[in-house]
Picture 1 (spheres, rainbow, N blue to C red):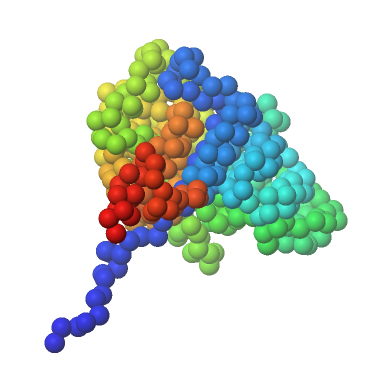
Picture 2: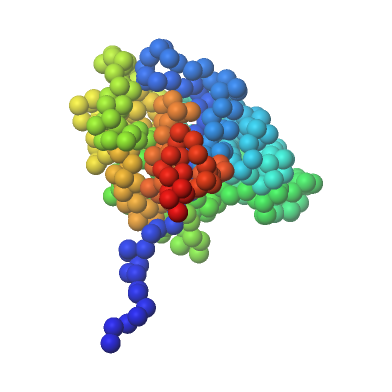
Length: 393
Ligand SMILES: Cc1cc2nc3c(=O)[nH]c(=O)nc-3n(C[C@H](O)[C@H](O)[C@H](O)COP(=O)(O)O)c2cc1C
């Protein structure tokens, strides 16, 4: 007799929806990379437009980057929190430029003020020239050693301890935090760093490891390394990916939009940006991104639907998933099968592309919008079909 209970094989079960974040363009936005045409300056009113749109569209949160060319992530997040209801704020925290005790107080204050909507992205930094401007003169691995001490003090304070610490980089005596964070013991820590030192710090201190958008096999390899480093410490970690998105109703439209985005960049601009990124950065993650395309604009699809055009002139996240909604969703499922549960997306310009991602891609991924939906009885120019159905029933 046939078994009446239908058993769905594990692989065929719909995967859990991804946690989908967006990005606040605190260093500016625009429609054409490498061009001043249609540029949007990084002003707070615009950040508010983006944040309030993605809050309603069903995004989980937003990443706020840090760096000499970014409007400050903490101040911006504090302002945007007041203009949003559910959105979480993944705020970049750069150890080495503030004291751990001061950072613990800021963490607790912002987490309380947002009712527990704060997440932190630990950014050690990969540009020694920029770091020197902030008073950090340590080499690559020593910066990670400093970050380890920083996070040890920061965590003990948020856990409620009175801390005495005498290390190579920090010394504090009788340090304590009078007002705890809303999330206990502390807001989750995220981190991106591809070097051995970065992976060891991630495994020791953080909850979620972030990678820039490399091809699936490379991401899977990193995930294995981080998992193994965490397992040695009896810890388990989650994983996220940072990608741009160019999603359109058809694949042809999406690739045309990708071409348009880099249509005004000259070869000189590309050569200049590539040599600057190589000369100024000591980040292993950045080097891996540059090696994906080698600065060549004729070899930009570095894996199926993974396009490296953004990385021709932008440091950090340099790849986009390009395609129609079903294909892009399929590519994301491949990352998900490798262990990714969180996506931090962006697209140029960030306001319009957030709508495209939410309206075209979210339905494919099972992500619900937060806005009120229509009742079937609504009769207007967008609900003709529903009204007809209602009339017929
Ligand atoms: C998702 C993600 C976001 C990052 N955000 C920033 C940032 O806002 N500012 C910054 O200076 N570096 C940022 N980084 C760079 C790393 O934090 C790290 O400092 C750098 O890559 C050097 O580390 P590595 O040599 O271990 O790769 C980011 C990296 C990733 C993967």
